[in-house]
Image (cartoon, rainbow, N blue to C red):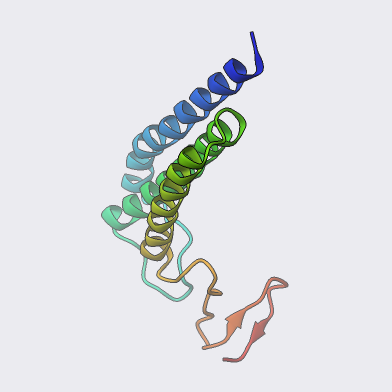
Length: 134
């Protein structure tokens, strides 16, 4: 078994893991949403309906699955066939998946990934748990 074959197998397993995370996440999210599980949301908001909770949980599993699929593409492209054409295709795939990830993050949390979570008093939360006025 040569290096190229090993990398191809690892890439296929990563692809499988990405798809499996999305499918399992979709299936596990159904009973969680129906039983009233409330994903993290901005403080001070009303509880989510089961539909909204399911969308949030499903979106999170899709995001994780997309990350695994991007990792698989990078592994296969960079380690196996680093040609200008394959790197260009990889760049396009990563751009599309990054756009999807940002769109899902905005849909799930209501803010862009680089924005901090708003506190109910109008401040912005910081990592140590304190609040900085806006």
